[in-house]
Length: 208
Figure (cartoon, rainbow, N blue to C red):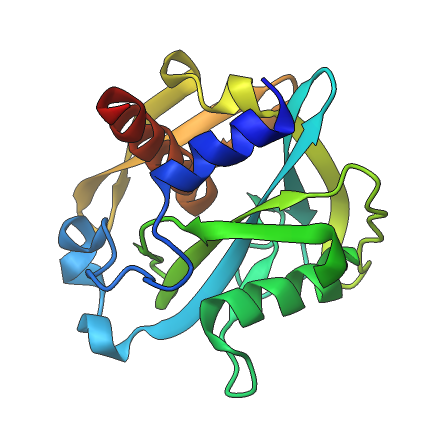
């Protein structure tokens, strides 16, 4: 698939940049007993960066350092809290991507938003989907990012690779997604956002 074809397919599947998602986080109902009301969640954003190489597209992910307060040692997208100076989720995701992995805004082509996601740490996260210039140079901030790497987009979007697991948490069985690629295990919020992209692509592809 060419970059133009990938751009068109992805853009059809997301909320437009001028129409960010307004519904409550798609997983909020399942976590309602752990969460404050949606309005009390702290707004945050992540960048979902996709690189279109000649031999296939890749998804950029980070391994967070162990010493971070939230989600330390986990695989995640670059992102964080939306600050007052940011221009909404897009501004926050772009800023955080530069701070965490040195990804310049000029190397990004934002396409739109995935559905919002609530974390048990109290954030209402808006994922921003963007194409990345294959020539972009990534320089991880060692204070936040232990490693930045790519996984094949086709692999993580394959429903057969998206495991649904469960565990006991606070007296209830909780469900979560996990995607394993080689020695990498992507789970929790990051895996759920990838699954959300998969589902949105499936629906938009069905509509043609």
